[in-house]
Length: 555
Image 1 (tube, rainbow, N blue to C red):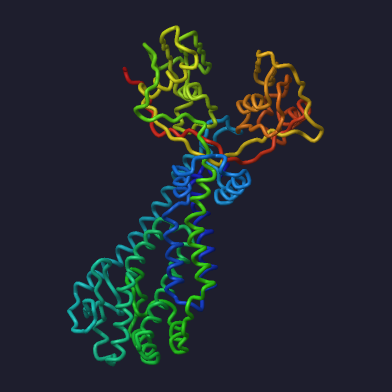
Image 2 (image 1 turned 180 degrees about the horizontal axis):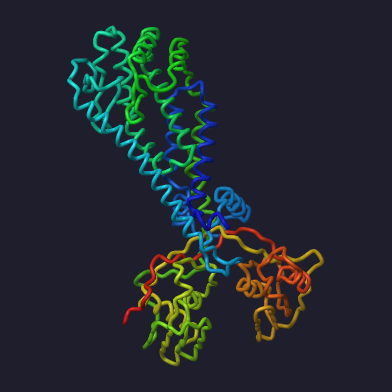
């Protein structure tokens, strides 16, 4: 069973990218361990927020940039590099396109998905309830507090329900001190503690903590997220310690005040309130007493940080720009003028048959028992594997009889069918490049066995299950025909030009069994045509359906 059949490829790729991003942030933080803690904190915060921002959004933005349109400006090596990088960043491939499956659908997939969604929902609610419970407990403790006279720039309260000093609130934060510390701390100790809490207020630590709590609630199953949370708490405390010492507080007095607070604390600090006793106390006291002076950021490290930031932003944007080529899928605005049929009758076909019949005499389109997938293929001239939409698109069938003026040019019929789909089925879509599995049709080791023929304009290709006969045609045409018989699209990479004829016979039972018995289509292609199918991945322009009605409108 394919992983992407259960977990959406977009989610798997996003988790993979965010984990790699966090690993890079960790390496940068390690290289900056002797510099200011606020820089390391910023790195961990960005890596946390990355879980809320998929790279695919930035890549998609790059593909829609209007100021870079000319394909010749982009070299083939650049495209190859971009494709390779996207393959690394998106190791999981969506399996939602309409080509024949290589194995029967597994009926338990929907059940597994439902179980996973229920399991995730339980975890999400549990984490969220924990944060809400802690927040309500802190709120009650804050409401029970009494104002304290101080020279701090923020409101200070004393509450008997608080077990350690902390900051409560995001947009109107207040510093809350435990009533138990009254008389326990010298004025110099209290001043150092207040300086620490005011630093949390100025840094908006409660706001950033709330953002990371959202990340933890959504991605509670990912240990990397919880590891980032621990790093955020650690570095925010180091950053405040550095600021308190910079303001002139004595290290011995400050360390002593932290230890006294810890003696009074009976419970662990809450993650939703920044407090003086947070983080690794032993490490903090050691850093304070050793008076570790953080180094200024050297020019080399400034360049490193700037390069990393620009790369994180511009690289996915550039991948989108480079891989965005002139679309091969027609795209018309909602009010584009398209020719239309003079009359069209559409009914739902409930015969239960699987075979379709259609004809297109001059100025007409008549189809019986046709799926909308096939209608879209015909209208836009693209194969089914380039179309992504609802599952019923390939199962719900219709009878369509449409007629226009008999003198209408034949090349107008696809445009008329596009108009019909847009007006009667409210079809709307967008084009998008996606990294899909393909078969590359290449020349085998012993060379091609295709028979060259003169091009007399009567090109034809025909076949039934188990055989394919091409009287006259290009290798690209052969690849298109093979695509309809395999579990993924076939792209011509032989480099062979000209017109050929060939015959191919295989056992239909083994059509999709790559590496299977000698009767499958894979060895047949190599033995009879001198070609081979190589599994690869490639960016392919796809038509992604945004909206499509199940029932046609009356007009």
